[in-house]
Amino acid sequence: MKRVTAFVGSARKKHTYNAVRQFMVYLQALGDIEYEIVVLSNYHLGICRGCKQCFAKGEESCPLKDDRDVLIEKMMASDGVVFATPNYAFNVSGIMKVFLDRLAFIFHRPRFFGKTFTSIVAQGICGGDKIVSYLDLVGNALGFNTVKGSCLTALEPMTKQEKLKIDRSLARHSQRFYKRLIKSDYPVPTWLNLMVFRMGRTSMRLELDETSFDYRYYKAKGWFESDYYYPVRLGVLKKTVGSLFDWIQVRRTRNRQHGSALSL
Image (cartoon, rainbow, N blue to C red; front, side, top):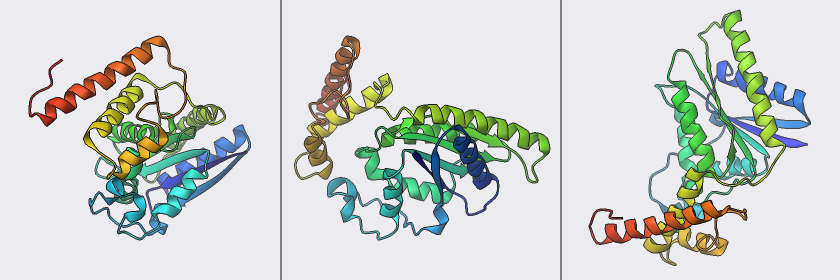
Protein backbone atom coordinates (compact mmCIF):
# COMPACT_ATOMS: atom_id res chain seq x y z
CA MET A 1 0.00 0.00 0.00
CA LYS A 2 1.15 3.52 -0.80
CA ARG A 3 0.35 6.55 1.30
CA VAL A 4 -0.34 9.89 -0.42
CA THR A 5 -0.83 13.19 1.39
CA ALA A 6 -2.22 16.32 -0.25
CA PHE A 7 -1.62 19.76 1.22
CA VAL A 8 -4.36 22.17 0.17
CA GLY A 9 -3.76 25.91 0.24
CA SER A 10 -7.40 26.94 0.35
CA ALA A 11 -9.86 27.12 3.22
CA ARG A 12 -12.78 26.78 0.78
CA LYS A 13 -13.78 23.19 0.16
CA LYS A 14 -14.69 23.91 -3.43
CA HIS A 15 -12.70 23.98 -6.69
CA THR A 16 -9.21 23.16 -5.33
CA TYR A 17 -10.33 20.77 -2.60
CA ASN A 18 -12.78 18.95 -4.87
CA ALA A 19 -10.10 18.52 -7.53
CA VAL A 20 -7.77 16.92 -4.99
CA ARG A 21 -10.51 14.61 -3.76
CA GLN A 22 -11.29 13.51 -7.33
CA PHE A 23 -7.58 13.00 -7.99
CA MET A 24 -7.42 10.67 -4.98
CA VAL A 25 -10.48 8.74 -6.18
CA TYR A 26 -8.76 8.12 -9.50
CA LEU A 27 -5.57 7.08 -7.68
CA GLN A 28 -7.41 4.56 -5.56
CA ALA A 29 -8.94 3.07 -8.71
CA LEU A 30 -5.41 2.35 -9.96
CA GLY A 31 -4.03 0.57 -6.89
CA ASP A 32 -3.86 0.19 -3.13
CA ILE A 33 -3.70 3.83 -2.02
CA GLU A 34 -4.30 5.36 1.41
CA TYR A 35 -4.63 9.13 1.38
CA GLU A 36 -5.06 12.17 3.58
CA ILE A 37 -6.10 15.66 2.55
CA VAL A 38 -4.50 18.30 4.77
CA VAL A 39 -6.10 21.75 4.69
CA LEU A 40 -3.29 24.12 5.63
CA SER A 41 -5.61 26.74 7.12
CA ASN A 42 -6.49 24.22 9.84
CA TYR A 43 -2.90 24.38 11.11
CA HIS A 44 -0.95 27.14 12.80
CA LEU A 45 1.85 28.42 10.57
CA GLY A 46 3.89 31.47 11.50
CA ILE A 47 5.32 33.85 8.92
CA CYS A 48 9.05 33.35 8.34
CA ARG A 49 11.09 36.24 9.76
CA GLY A 50 14.12 35.66 7.56
CA CYS A 51 16.42 35.26 10.56
CA LYS A 52 18.26 32.37 8.85
CA GLN A 53 18.68 30.49 12.12
CA CYS A 54 17.49 27.31 10.39
CA PHE A 55 20.38 27.64 7.93
CA ALA A 56 23.06 28.51 10.44
CA LYS A 57 22.04 26.53 13.53
CA GLY A 58 19.44 24.00 12.34
CA GLU A 59 15.67 24.00 12.06
CA GLU A 60 15.25 23.32 15.79
CA SER A 61 16.54 26.84 16.48
CA CYS A 62 13.66 28.52 14.62
CA PRO A 63 12.01 31.08 16.94
CA LEU A 64 8.56 30.27 15.54
CA LYS A 65 6.73 27.57 17.46
CA ASP A 66 3.98 26.38 15.17
CA ASP A 67 2.79 23.27 13.32
CA ARG A 68 5.61 23.20 10.77
CA ASP A 69 7.12 19.97 12.09
CA VAL A 70 3.72 18.26 12.25
CA LEU A 71 3.27 18.91 8.53
CA ILE A 72 6.83 17.84 7.69
CA GLU A 73 6.25 14.58 9.57
CA LYS A 74 3.20 13.95 7.40
CA MET A 75 5.37 14.45 4.31
CA MET A 76 8.07 12.13 5.63
CA ALA A 77 5.48 9.44 6.37
CA SER A 78 4.12 9.61 2.80
CA ASP A 79 5.17 7.86 -0.38
CA GLY A 80 3.59 10.61 -2.45
CA VAL A 81 2.86 14.28 -1.83
CA VAL A 82 0.54 16.72 -3.61
CA PHE A 83 0.60 20.50 -3.22
CA ALA A 84 -2.72 22.01 -4.32
CA THR A 85 -3.47 25.69 -4.49
CA PRO A 86 -5.87 28.12 -6.10
CA ASN A 87 -4.43 30.77 -8.37
CA TYR A 88 -4.54 33.93 -6.27
CA ALA A 89 -3.15 37.07 -7.92
CA PHE A 90 -1.23 34.88 -10.41
CA ASN A 91 0.58 32.96 -7.68
CA VAL A 92 0.06 30.33 -5.01
CA SER A 93 -2.30 31.26 -2.20
CA GLY A 94 -1.00 33.14 0.82
CA ILE A 95 -1.18 30.15 3.17
CA MET A 96 0.62 27.95 0.63
CA LYS A 97 3.44 30.50 0.32
CA VAL A 98 3.71 30.73 4.12
CA PHE A 99 3.99 26.93 4.21
CA LEU A 100 6.70 26.88 1.54
CA ASP A 101 8.66 29.58 3.34
CA ARG A 102 8.56 27.47 6.50
CA LEU A 103 10.25 24.69 4.48
CA ALA A 104 13.11 26.97 3.41
CA PHE A 105 15.82 25.00 5.21
CA ILE A 106 14.85 21.87 3.28
CA PHE A 107 15.64 23.67 0.03
CA HIS A 108 19.17 23.92 1.47
CA ARG A 109 19.11 20.38 2.86
CA PRO A 110 16.71 18.32 0.69
CA ARG A 111 15.43 15.08 2.15
CA PHE A 112 12.42 13.69 0.29
CA PHE A 113 14.39 11.38 -1.99
CA GLY A 114 12.53 8.41 -3.43
CA LYS A 115 9.14 10.04 -2.81
CA THR A 116 6.82 11.24 -5.58
CA PHE A 117 5.50 14.80 -5.86
CA THR A 118 3.01 16.63 -8.01
CA SER A 119 0.83 19.73 -7.92
CA ILE A 120 -2.70 20.82 -8.73
CA VAL A 121 -3.54 24.45 -9.50
CA ALA A 122 -7.16 25.58 -9.74
CA GLN A 123 -8.05 28.85 -11.41
CA GLY A 124 -10.86 30.83 -12.97
CA ILE A 125 -9.11 32.53 -15.86
CA CYS A 126 -5.37 32.28 -16.60
CA GLY A 127 -1.80 32.26 -15.32
CA GLY A 128 -1.88 28.90 -13.56
CA ASP A 129 0.60 27.16 -15.85
CA LYS A 130 3.39 29.31 -14.45
CA ILE A 131 2.34 28.33 -10.92
CA VAL A 132 2.53 24.67 -11.92
CA SER A 133 6.07 25.25 -13.22
CA TYR A 134 6.98 26.98 -9.96
CA LEU A 135 5.65 24.08 -7.88
CA ASP A 136 7.49 21.60 -10.11
CA LEU A 137 10.67 23.50 -9.24
CA VAL A 138 9.73 23.38 -5.55
CA GLY A 139 9.25 19.61 -5.70
CA ASN A 140 12.62 19.07 -7.35
CA ALA A 141 14.38 21.36 -4.87
CA LEU A 142 12.90 19.48 -1.91
CA GLY A 143 14.30 16.21 -3.28
CA PHE A 144 11.14 14.61 -4.69
CA ASN A 145 10.70 12.67 -7.90
CA THR A 146 8.45 15.26 -9.53
CA VAL A 147 5.55 14.56 -11.86
CA LYS A 148 4.40 17.61 -13.82
CA GLY A 149 1.31 19.13 -12.22
CA SER A 150 -2.04 20.09 -13.68
CA CYS A 151 -3.71 23.48 -14.10
CA LEU A 152 -7.50 23.27 -13.97
CA THR A 153 -9.55 26.16 -15.33
CA ALA A 154 -13.24 26.76 -14.59
CA LEU A 155 -15.49 29.53 -13.34
CA GLU A 156 -18.10 29.14 -10.63
CA PRO A 157 -20.61 27.68 -11.02
CA MET A 158 -18.76 25.10 -13.11
CA THR A 159 -20.40 24.01 -16.36
CA LYS A 160 -20.83 20.34 -17.27
CA GLN A 161 -18.31 20.77 -20.08
CA GLU A 162 -15.74 22.31 -17.71
CA LYS A 163 -16.26 19.52 -15.18
CA LEU A 164 -15.84 16.86 -17.85
CA LYS A 165 -12.61 18.46 -19.07
CA ILE A 166 -11.25 18.71 -15.53
CA ASP A 167 -12.15 15.11 -14.72
CA ARG A 168 -10.34 13.90 -17.82
CA SER A 169 -7.28 15.97 -16.93
CA LEU A 170 -7.24 14.61 -13.37
CA ALA A 171 -7.63 11.03 -14.63
CA ARG A 172 -4.58 11.41 -16.89
CA HIS A 173 -2.67 13.19 -14.14
CA SER A 174 -3.40 10.42 -11.63
CA GLN A 175 -2.11 7.80 -14.08
CA ARG A 176 1.17 9.65 -14.55
CA PHE A 177 1.54 10.14 -10.80
CA TYR A 178 0.72 6.50 -10.01
CA LYS A 179 3.23 5.22 -12.54
CA ARG A 180 5.98 7.21 -10.83
CA LEU A 181 4.68 6.43 -7.32
CA ILE A 182 4.93 2.66 -7.62
CA LYS A 183 8.57 2.88 -8.70
CA SER A 184 9.75 4.57 -5.49
CA ASP A 185 13.25 4.67 -6.94
CA TYR A 186 16.27 6.94 -6.90
CA PRO A 187 16.71 8.01 -10.54
CA VAL A 188 19.80 9.28 -12.27
CA PRO A 189 19.67 13.08 -11.86
CA THR A 190 18.77 15.34 -14.74
CA TRP A 191 21.43 17.73 -15.99
CA LEU A 192 19.74 20.58 -14.09
CA ASN A 193 19.54 18.64 -10.82
CA LEU A 194 23.15 17.54 -11.16
CA MET A 195 24.27 21.12 -11.77
CA VAL A 196 22.30 22.45 -8.78
CA PHE A 197 23.79 19.81 -6.47
CA ARG A 198 27.40 20.05 -7.61
CA MET A 199 27.58 23.85 -7.77
CA GLY A 200 25.57 24.26 -4.56
CA ARG A 201 27.70 21.86 -2.54
CA THR A 202 30.93 23.37 -3.87
CA SER A 203 29.73 26.84 -2.92
CA MET A 204 28.91 25.65 0.61
CA ARG A 205 32.28 23.93 0.96
CA LEU A 206 34.14 27.10 0.02
CA GLU A 207 31.91 29.76 1.58
CA LEU A 208 30.95 28.11 4.88
CA ASP A 209 32.71 26.35 7.74
CA GLU A 210 32.00 24.18 10.79
CA THR A 211 30.05 27.00 12.46
CA SER A 212 27.29 26.57 9.86
CA PHE A 213 24.68 23.85 10.29
CA ASP A 214 24.37 23.59 6.49
CA TYR A 215 28.10 22.84 6.27
CA ARG A 216 28.02 20.25 9.04
CA TYR A 217 24.95 18.60 7.51
CA TYR A 218 26.59 18.25 4.09
CA LYS A 219 29.79 16.99 5.67
CA ALA A 220 27.95 14.37 7.76
CA LYS A 221 26.05 13.18 4.68
CA GLY A 222 29.27 12.90 2.70
CA TRP A 223 27.85 15.27 0.07
CA PHE A 224 31.10 17.20 -0.34
CA GLU A 225 32.65 14.07 -1.90
CA SER A 226 29.68 12.19 -3.41
CA ASP A 227 28.52 12.25 -7.02
CA TYR A 228 24.99 13.18 -5.96
CA TYR A 229 22.68 13.37 -2.94
CA TYR A 230 22.15 9.60 -2.97
CA PRO A 231 24.12 6.66 -4.40
CA VAL A 232 23.53 6.54 -8.14
CA ARG A 233 25.50 5.31 -11.12
CA LEU A 234 26.45 8.20 -13.36
CA GLY A 235 27.68 7.62 -16.87
CA VAL A 236 31.12 8.80 -17.94
CA LEU A 237 29.70 11.96 -19.50
CA LYS A 238 27.72 13.00 -16.43
CA LYS A 239 30.68 12.24 -14.15
CA THR A 240 32.85 14.47 -16.32
CA VAL A 241 30.30 17.27 -16.54
CA GLY A 242 29.66 16.99 -12.79
CA SER A 243 33.35 17.66 -12.18
CA LEU A 244 33.10 20.58 -14.58
CA PHE A 245 30.23 22.04 -12.55
CA ASP A 246 32.42 21.79 -9.43
CA TRP A 247 35.27 23.56 -11.21
CA ILE A 248 33.01 26.32 -12.52
CA GLN A 249 31.70 27.00 -9.02
CA VAL A 250 35.23 27.10 -7.61
CA ARG A 251 36.08 29.79 -10.15
CA ARG A 252 32.85 31.67 -9.50
CA THR A 253 33.41 31.65 -5.75
CA ARG A 254 37.05 32.73 -5.96
CA ASN A 255 36.20 35.51 -8.37
CA ARG A 256 33.35 36.69 -6.17
CA GLN A 257 35.59 36.69 -3.11
CA HIS A 258 38.13 38.76 -5.01
CA GLY A 259 35.46 41.07 -6.42
CA SER A 260 35.99 40.16 -10.06
CA ALA A 261 33.69 38.88 -12.76
CA LEU A 262 33.49 35.22 -13.75
CA SER A 263 36.30 34.29 -16.09
CA LEU A 264 36.53 30.84 -17.62
